[in-house]
Amino acid sequence: MKYTNEERETVCVYDHVDNKWDVYTCVQKHLTKLNKIATPYWEEKDGESGRVTAGRWKLNSSQVRFAVERQFTDEQRAAMSERARKRFGS
Image 1 (tube, rainbow, N blue to C red):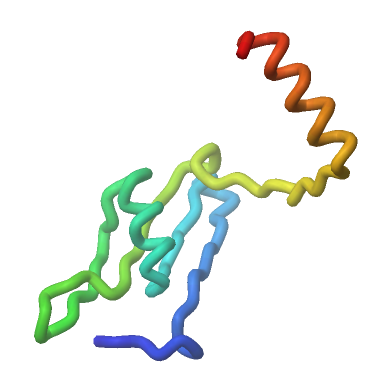
Image 2 (cartoon, one colour):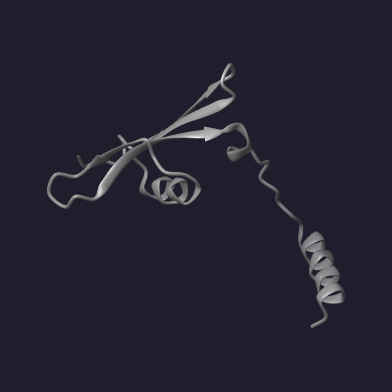
């Protein structure tokens, strides 16, 4: 099945009792990343091409992370660059 842009989604459901995530996606970028982490227990394939269009994974609690988007000022970037230059010598 092919999904339109409006239909594409990634859904993550956490099971507190089992301490596991159930992740479903039909977003190609997420399919690629999740396949690098684990093997899906369910897949949906396009009938014509045989390409995987959706999947579901069971992931351990430690395999899912939430991160704060960091935005640095020009001064912070320059300071980080200088520290890296000193540390790695270039």
